[in-house]
Image (cartoon, rainbow over all chains, first blue to last red; front, side, top):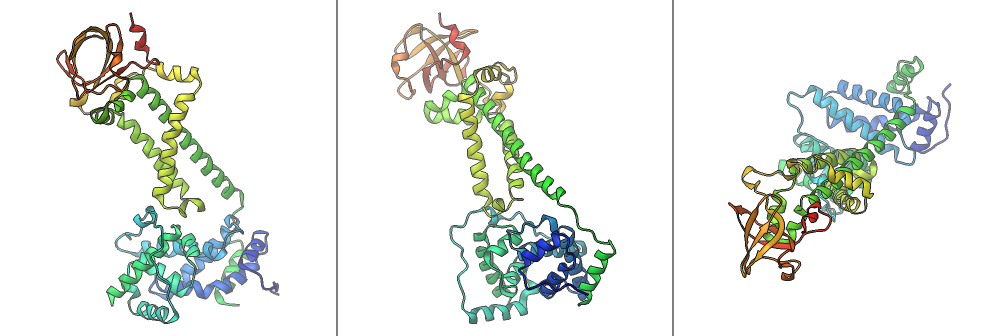
Amino acid sequence: MVEQIPESSDEIIAVRIQQGNTQALGILIDRYETKLKRYGMRFLAYDDDINDAVQEIFIKTYQNIQSFDSTRKFSSWIYRIAHNEFINHIRKHAKDPLPFLDFEVDALIPHPFSEHTPENDMERKEVREMMDKALKKLSPKYREILLLFYYEELSYEEIADILRIPKTTVGVRLNRAKKELRKQL
Amino acid sequence: MTHLRETILKKIHEKEVVMRPRWPFVLRGILRIILVAVVICFALFVMMVLMVALRENGLMQLPAFGAPGLFHFFINLPWLIILGVFIALIIVEILFKKFSFGYRTPALITLGVIGVGTVLGGLFLSSIGPRAMTDRIRNNAFVRSEMMREGPEFIRQKPLTHGIIRELNVSDMLLETEDETVRVLFDESTRFPDGKEILFVGSPIFVGGLRNGSIIKAFGISNEPPELKFYRMRK
């Protein structure tokens, strides 16, 4: 019989797993399976690859759960694992190595203000429609940040934690990604 | 229960997938901090040795002589050693990025802060460091060696000469150094950071300028700093 745990935050559930409550992992799998598959769909072409990658993500989450700091957001942590896993998967199967380095010029330079301007619902919808048509044509660097912001609806801070870049760089990169998206259409 | 959930929980139950213990992560974090501290201490120490060496061989005097002094100061710096310090700072920067407070700040800022901190720290330590330690550094053969005065071949003409004035005229003087006597020419363009009062027979001075045989066209003349050993040449 599966233990019923009252509705708790991801962080509290992660702490329970750290304390040895393995069944609690099931709740996190239920919460994140669809999101991670949706995230993976934009990186990988085949369902089997996506399922394998997502399974690997949850396995690594469990194996490394003791490294999770419960004062931080669990979603950023698991998306970071997902980011690394999808990139590794692409690199393994790509003919040429990806020019997708974590060491990026726009993360070197301080940006005093984020160039990304706030949008209303209509604009967001417009961007999502553009993404559906042209996302695969974008480089992984721009593809990922658009996914995290428009599909996963993560905040700048969460995206910064996942991609390990300054918060101000997130805004700059989002703006560039949208310009690149418009160019592709 | 979804298929994925079932698969993963089964693997855990059958010990196919095992949780890693906490201690390797804690140890890795501690080792990272220790490594950052060691590399920073190394960079600070090298900076301190560099500052003492620059004072020892007199290169620190050159910037006081204006643009030509500054030019010779830069091209005579031990660039290999400075490159070593720079590489150490890059290593610190890479390690910093593993911490959340590290990657949230643009690299140029953290590198700038670490770099400036290292230079200032080296300067500070070299001036207040224990006398016994700075003396030992000053007497070290490496510090006094040619390696600390590296530069392109045509530049290795020693832009600094020190000695005692033996004869003084309106626009030139005879300077007795440790090994020889040279003629030093000076004019309105020559800088005197310590004033022209230092020009009298018997005065120990520093002359900034390149040699042409036994003649030096001085772009700067100053007092000899007391911490230099050459001071005992005074007769």
